[in-house]
Image (cartoon, rainbow, N blue to C red; front, top):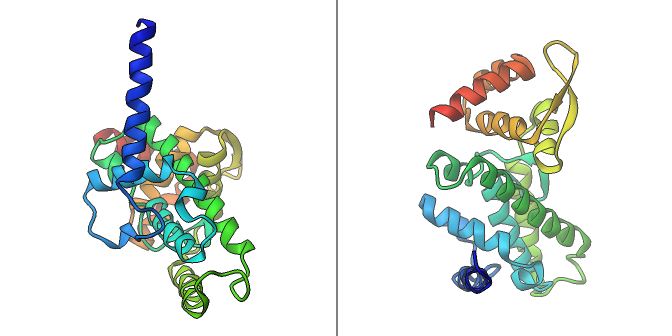
Length: 229
């Protein structure tokens, strides 16, 4: 690749990034309330991945709440805690199922969106609804609604699944196998595959059996399921 070709490629990437950000009014609209196609979800996820916190909500509580709700649904977490799973699977799982992203791209996107959500959650928790919120009573009510929705949607999950989500986010780790009690090394690719399948299982009894199969059992089932897609 020549220098001029490289420059053109960089310009193209920058133009695409600007267009993606401008296509959405992040913080002004809660997009995940709409019926989104897989292509819509990819576009929205990329817009959030590329946008800065300042650009998304600029310290305004009403915007933080909308951004937080969107990111929680994209990531499949509760609104006020990125480590706790929501009642529904992550919207971005659709991207992998429809082969709109590769496994590596999915892991990177998931990490980016979790980092963005962590930043929003931190900003929300640091804001005092009674004194710092812009928008007065309406904004305070919105904050209460968001907290209530988070508590309603919160689902308790096995410790090993929470630990695997941490591996997806932070990388390679040694975990205790829930079946054998032995310690095993787990990489982010295996952790991502297991949590994807766990989130996709809707029957509580099946989820329980999946976890009880242990790390090797969950990994084997997950790789088979993903390779069939």
